[in-house]
Length: 261
Length: 257
Image (cartoon, rainbow over all chains, first blue to last red; front, side, top):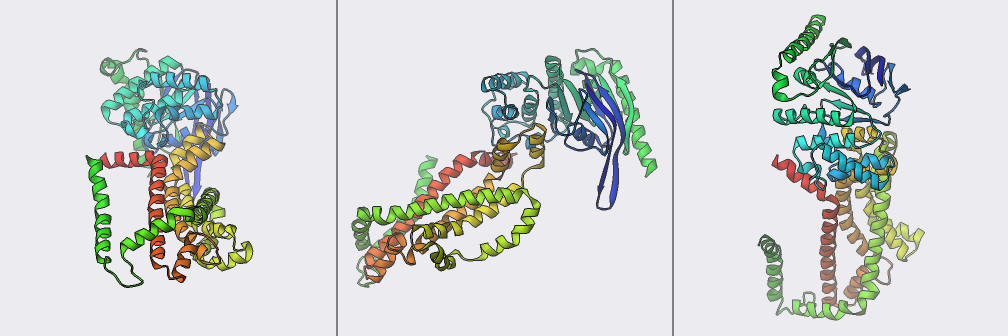
């Protein structure tokens, strides 16, 4: 279980004090798919970096399976938005996926098996020997996903607007891919996005954030069927309804911000 | 087809120049500018004999040793300095000063400490080659991508894996730039270090020929030196292609997108 308890983050620097996150408390159960959505500049990335142990919160804490996160914890992987910059351009695809396993001291034979399974799960079994820059943007992000799931002890996947930089069709493919991967691996997925449709389409639950200083505005359970596809799910009246709810909340958050300034 | 074209283009001008030299100097009676035919005969008689073993190979050996030591020291120090801001602020003025000293003037000083043997000559080569490698490594290490560094942190890639796969590979294009500059400096210093107080080597032999009025032999030594430079830079290019294959591929891709 992933528990975020009273998390607050204040950036202090150059005589300017910015309260990015005021107070966020949130629990994600094992195996859950939760989307975090909010207006741009609401501190989504800050929140994710705090959860990943890449950034120290000003106060409050993040607990992974009851243990306090003070640095990047084992069993948690991050998929960054900038796929082009998060893969090692001097390593071939399979070596990119393998590197964290080498760092974790996994034996060679097992590494090979995990890498092959992960690349197969993202549909890249034929790209082992390619360099990342030889692949399209969508394929590069699939390599990054493969790297994140190539483990037999990892359980939490943090995704920071992973599909924001690819074209719309690739994006739809990747959305379906991540749903499949989630169903296959049973990972806990925490997916940060600014795209309202995406959050409803992907998540079992959507957590809406307000404008900074950020708090959780509302949590919404997505009661769409488990099997989703771009055509039927997106034309489901219930989808439109949920989407409308999220949209209204985000608009409200934006308006409040305007009034404040 | 394209390779043949490139070979023809690359060789065309040298062939023309050598031909001009050949005919222009053919009837030369000037003692200091002998005909090319005479120089080539001297080349054959002088260098393709025992001199290779007594002078050429020892010179190249010292160059190799000094160059390797400069690479080792330059990269190691460069990584250490590039990763720590305080160390950089502390050392940068001193490094700029040391770099500004032309290495040949160090020869008299190094003779005092290291004598006139091979050790001194290797030290002269190191003292000149190390700067471009060091300073380029510092720049390369400083320019490591944030996202890639975060990726290493979040995947808990540390220690030796991080040093190799993040730090050194990230900096490798700049390190190679420094290494290329260092190679030409190294060849110059190899010759210069042998012109002072030496009893063998490339530079020594060429100066000996000049003093002994063996002009065709002197010319042939200069030609051999030029050929050595070309061969070394070809070897360097092969090494670079092996090390930076990914980099050139990436750049070509970026240009196409």
